[in-house]
Amino acid sequence: MKKIKSIFNWFCAHRWRWILVIILLGGVFFFLKSRSDSPQNIQIQTATVEKGTLVVTIAASGNITLASETDITTATSGVVKTVLVNNGDKVVKGQKIAEITSDEEGAARQSEAYLAYLESQEAVKTAQKEQAEADIVMWEARKAIFDAQETIDYKNNNAINPVTKEEYTEEEKAIIDKTLDKAKAAFEEAELKFKNAGAVIANAKAKQTAAWRNYQEASSFIYSPAAGVVNNLTLSPGVVLVPTTSASDNSTSSAQTVGKISNPQATLQATVSLSELEVTKVKPGQKATLTLDAYPDKTFTGKILAVNTSGSASQGVVSYPATILLDPTTVEIYQNMAVSAQIILESKTDVLLVPSSAIEEINGEKVVEAVSDEGTKQTLIEVGLSNDTMTEVISG
Image (cartoon, rainbow, N blue to C red):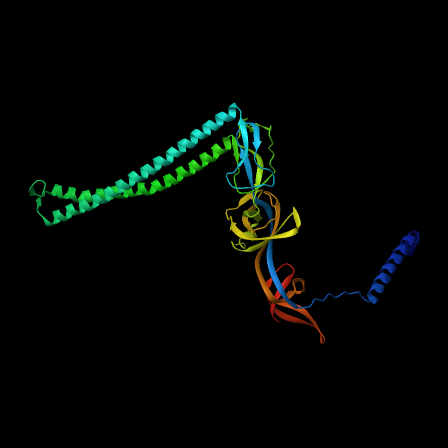
């Protein structure tokens, strides 16, 4: 009896807590019941199966790496005497842009460059002479082979040595046979020298061309490096040109830029970065569309020129550069402009398309909820090409 009374007293002491718990439980019960009794607002989204074009692309970003502009440069120093063209003028390659009154340092640099050019001319002449000499030696070596073969044939058909008037000794026979081997080896050596002489001449001519460019850079005249339209030319009479220096070693640089030649018909290239998963899908010849931040309302076209599969790693991430060759355009595009590209991997026209989000996979089968006048039912389908939003339906 005392135990029951004790429980009753405890309950009375905590009665407000129990009343609060009962009220809360009741509220939750009626809230859940009201939700179960009310109709659910279910929104069903539908999409029509229709024919269209399906394009599968890879997005990539990068920069313009070969632009339609060429720098006008000079390595001379002095005072601008005359400017022979204006911004906007059309010029041809090698045309004079301006004349400079060289200072002492500029005149010395010009003399050194001209001497280097003369020496490169001599190197070309020397290489051509050595090729001619190698040609003669090669033909002499060829004749030596025929002579050695004739001596062997005579030895094989005659017992008497025509030189000693006595019978061939074994040593003489061995020497005659070895002479043919020696003649063949000499011909191979002479032939190789003749062939290599062509490469030596080509290398000498390349150095001559480079020496001439260096002389033009150091000359008291500034020449146009390409055909096109002059722009950003910063020269005017009285302007002082001084050699630019490197901040690292304070040495004189080879040239400074004083303007540009714009050629809208020049070849444009962009380099974009691909991931490990993307690089296996991109091949030379695939088409691409490009947009530039500088021209947000324009779309440019091109194709994949090359894919560098060597790749490079940075902070554990490997990327592979791909070069895109842009189609000709009259828009002025400059080097290092930012590029966003869509590389077209595959495309199909006149195919049945459904939203990719509408397709489910049940027991390995592709299934869609088909809605018709007869109601809704699950339908098996066979799918083909797909991208992020749409999927091709082959049958079903």
